[in-house]
Length: 254
Image (cartoon, rainbow, N blue to C red; front, side, top):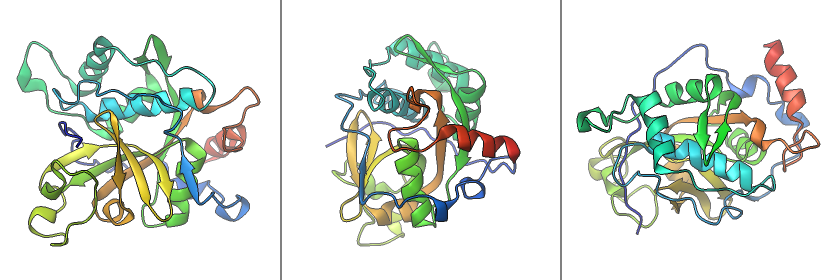
C-alpha cells in the first residue's frame, strides 16, 4: 500500500497557457497504440521526500525527467534529497528551517520555472522547451499526448476515499461524502502508462498506482503535455516517432 503527502495548490487559470488541441493535428497522426507504458524502463522512482514534505509537484517533475532519460537510452539516476529541497525552495518557497513554509506548489509556477530556469536532477540540468494543457474531456487527445510526450503531468483533487488505497477509482458513494473531489486535498501524480482495459498507471510516492479511467475523468483537474529536449533522440524524434522539430515550428507560429 502506497502512502505519502499531498501538496498541489489549486489550479490557477492563465489565458496564456497553450492548448494542445491548437497544434496537435489529430487526423494526421497515426492512432495511439492500445497500450502505452513509459514506466517500465525506470528501475526505481524513489519517494523524493514526498513522505515528509508536500513536494509532490517537485517529485512529479523529477519522476517525468527520469522516465524521459530511461526511454531515450540514458541511465535514470535518482535525484538527491538536496536537489529535491533546492527545487522545492525555488518554486514553492520552502525553507527547511521553517516547517510552516511547507505549503506545496502551484503546477503552473513549476512548469514556468522548469522552462525558464530548469531544475537539477541527479547532477544534470533538466529544462523543458514548452508545455501545453491537455483537454481531459477528449479521450483521443489524452491518449495521443501520453504516447507522444512520454507521460502526462497531471494534478488531482483527491477524495478522502483514496487515502491508503491500493488503487485509485471512484468509490461506490460517487462524488459525495468521502468521494467528494478535493475532500483529501490536491496532489500531483504524473500518468506514465495506459491500457484501454486496465486504466492508467500514475507515478506517486515513488511507486506506480493503478488508476481507473473514471478516476482521472472525475478527479484530475489539470493535465499538461511537456516538450522536453531530453525526450528527443539523436535523430530528432521521440521514441514514439513524433517529429518534435515540426511541433516546435507550430508552437513558434502560434
